[in-house]
Length: 116
Length: 115
Image (cartoon, rainbow over all chains, first blue to last red; front, side):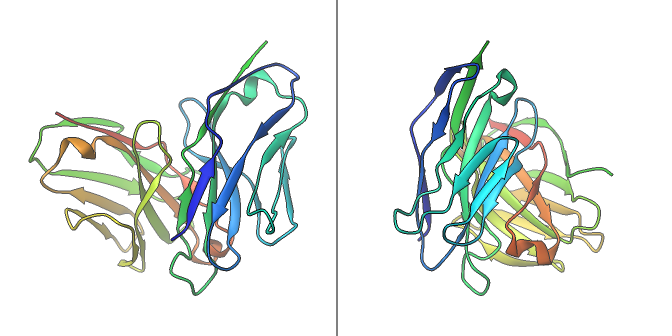
């Protein structure tokens, strides 16, 4: 079955530091890949996505590239802010017609804390 | 435009009891999914409803059941509660055609504690 593995956390950084959160996946075919973020006291929200190999998703300064050859979708940001403190989840969704279409498989989440 | 709303936000039950959680999807969304998020873990897919029918189901026992109403709102029912059912239950909605993009809109969840 499908699975997503995220780097073990938590991650603590100083403001303006570079961020990388690793994510690898196991899936059949060509899943769509996502990063969701959960800010304190809020629901999960989509941060960025990529639907095919070599696609780069980007939003709010965050980027992730769909690497089919390494089955990875690492999240990066060049300069983090205190407001980026949240829990980040990598996820995948199966292709249309497949058994996992329309449902997300999540990683365990990475807690990011950014200090001033 | 209201997003996904869930109720109640918190509740406490004892083992063996039954619980019903409710969800109103985002306006214009006709597909509702439910996820269970244990403490420190990622959300796990429970099931998905579309056109008032369960369309997909994750690896959860029959104690977990659901319903979708004609107005697209949904309920999650859990019978014979176990301590291990303590978790944050998330409702997510999307337009049916939006499933292909994978973007789900999540509520803030219902925190269930089983004693």
